Amino acid sequence: MAEDKKNSASSDGDEGENLAFEIMDGFVDHLVVELTKPEAVLSINDVRELAASFKKQNSPAYLAKLREYIDECLAQHEKDIWDKTRRRPFDRVLVKRFSHLFPAEGGLDTDIDALSRRILPGFFMAVQQMAGPELFDQCQNACKALAKAEQKKPGSRLHWNKLYDNAKANELVDDVFAVISSHFDDFDKRCAWLHDIIESHMAPTGDYSFEGESIAEWRLTTEHIHKLLDALFAPFRKILADGKSRDLAKKRYGQKACKTIEKLLKNIEAVMPVES
Image (cartoon, rainbow, N blue to C red; front, side, top):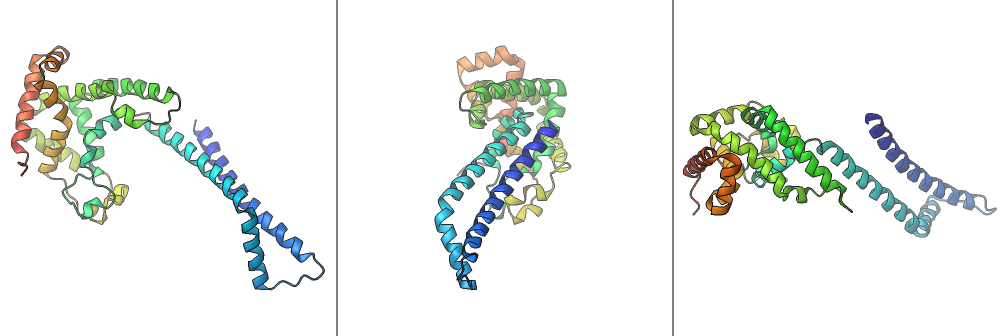
């Protein structure tokens, strides 16, 4: 596998290099033709004019080759991304639930209260500790199967949005957080624990420097933890508010778990700022 990737990258590099040499050789040939003429005495301006002439004559063909090469590179890049991320698609579906809290490029400079992606290592550590490695791995493997099925669909490349919207994939996330809800019996204490775990395992600022120059000054707050929990458990509000989906949740998680989730939702609502 590693050797295949190495060969692929090398092949891509060779193609780009060959194209560059082909263009250079073409111009040299063009220049040699002029130099072999009996009356040839070329000035600097003559060479520049020859270069302009060469570009005018050959640009369409070389641009077509360049576009083809770029398309091949993009296709390989997407494949490499898939190969890397398909190993943990559950992580992506999980993060998608609160990704709207992340800043856009440079966003931290105008909104220091946004949630930096630096939290991700500590967040995953905390989730796995609360859910238990066995359940987390089961959901990871089940989500891999769903992602693999998406990839096999005709004309499909990554199609992450389809996986994000996949009901079964989101049920897996719900399953994890239905179990995690029981850890928040003492809401304030668990929030403080979650804050400390994430804060002590933050990603280096350089990993997400695109978020803004303020990333070095960014600090995780208790308010960030509350917003994070609000986003993670938001689907349960809709589930438990509807009679039919509530009954299905009781069958899936048990009545006690549903009451635990309801209590957690109330605690989250109590600490969330009131929208004006």
